[in-house]
Image 1 (cartoon, rainbow, N blue to C red):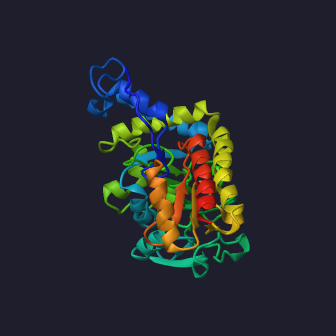
Image 2 (image 1 turned 90 degrees about the vertical axis):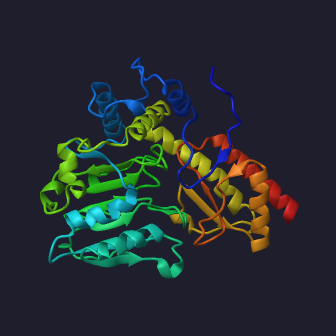
Image 3 (image 1 turned 30 degrees about the vertical axis):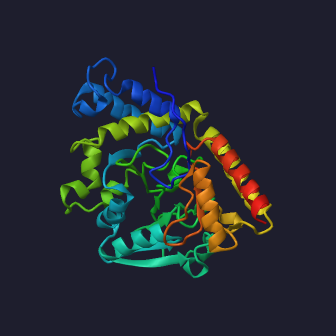
Amino acid sequence: MLKQVQRAYNFNAGPSALPLPVLQKAQEELVDFRGSGMSVMELSHRSALYEEVHNEAIRLLKELYKIPEGYHVLFLQGGASLQFSMVPMNFLQAGKSAGYVMTGAWSEKAFAEAKLIGEVFEAASTKQENYKRIPQFDELNYDKDISYLHITSNNTIFGTQWSQFPDTGDVPLIADMSSDILCKPVDVEKFALIYAGAQKNLGPSGVTVVILRPDMLERAAKNLPTMLRYDIHVKNNSLYNTPPTFGIYMLGEVLKWVKDQGGVEGIEQRNREKAALIYDAIDASNDFYRGHAEKDSRSLMNITFTLQSDELEKKFLSEAKKAGFVGLNGHRSVGGCRASTYNAVPVEACQALRDFMIQFQKENS
């Protein structure tokens, strides 16, 4: 019998909440996976049983995200942070530059890594506005002969998100979707490459998903160390070396759960309901709570706000912690508060936070 535990209201920015049914299934299968007498963590990554897990996760992601025929799905390691380097190593061609749209700390990090590899430039930036919004399409400034244009689809620290994506034509569009992948349907065909750390919406930390358009392999550099070459990972179905097998198993189980929720469309509907609960509490507070992001740039995944003073924020966070809320502190670089409402965060947790915010305002106004 599974042990019954009191679950926290988990608003951590990552690693973040996982679906309870997925955790319970993993608990059931932990010691004896599908009658093997072994945990999935003990299986050889060359075994038929693990290969079934691996390929099923790829198939489910392609199905749920409506990934076009021919695109490759890779399970890598090193997090999105390694992709900051792998992308320019593979695709920043000699004699060309790459454009980066600056929307927060993670795009800054990606830009800094690419700068070590070759010539890069800022195609747009809202840094002077403290990253309160996503640039408009007409603010994007780049030539048609660049190697690629890089964006960060959702900005965890500042709570902004691209609601639509630009059509870049022949310029390959590359996106870091670590913190909002699978939160809503996306036209994957717009992108030459998508990468995402799993620890927000896809599973536990340790797995990095890469979705790669097939023609990009022709552009990729071949004079790189083996583990930094996308073509090697494609050729070996992400099994060139030992992959993070348990993480991929968990990712596959999360994808099954997403399918049970009505797919990405069902998840989006629930995410909009969750975010609206908290944003409505902010908007109705008469400036007691102040949202950081401009309304048309608000994130479904990371809701950032401040209170009227540092003292009031400290009191809010202290009382929220006592009430069972976890992870509401804003990022150390910007302060304030942040509720990360990733896919697996239940509606009930967001309702509880909304009610807590309303009650706290009544008691402290």
